[in-house]
Picture 1 (cartoon, rainbow, N blue to C red):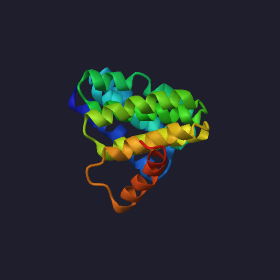
Picture 2 (cartoon, one colour; picture 1 turned 120 degrees about the vertical axis):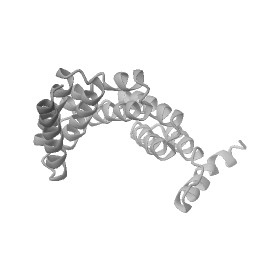
Picture 3 (cartoon, helix red, strand yellow; picture 1 turned 180 degrees about the vertical axis):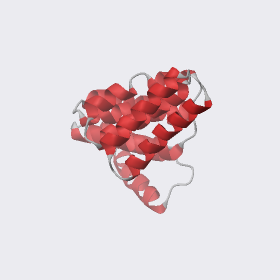
Picture 4 (cartoon, rainbow, N blue to C red; picture 1 turned 120 degrees about the horizontal axis):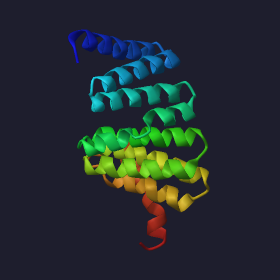
Length: 182
């Protein structure tokens, strides 16, 4: 990539971040899309995937889940193959969020579950917990109370230093197990 191209790409990426901060999500998505194309043209697959993920997040914020799903397509595989576990997990979570916004809860649970496993592998306790909370919420909406409780318990169980609120929630969620003699 030439120096001029680097400046052009950086300009597109910065414009995307600026638009995003200003809550101009569609303009941010367009700028991130341009940056992704420019990085791809220069052979930088990882940065291209990162820009596509940024584009996906901006599109989700703009309430365009179908376009967001298209933007993040294949990015998790690129990151995971490169050993970028956390970025891969975030891409999976972005995909799940798009499915959730499209009302496809079962698909969302599948991708959130994959993201959670990757976050756990990477030792990202808080991101694991947040992802398990998303799974729990989706299961609750599907009237799967036991699945929702189990998901939340699983997320809290992995925390090494829970806050007092998390400890309280953990204690409350253990009550059904105690009543059932587990």
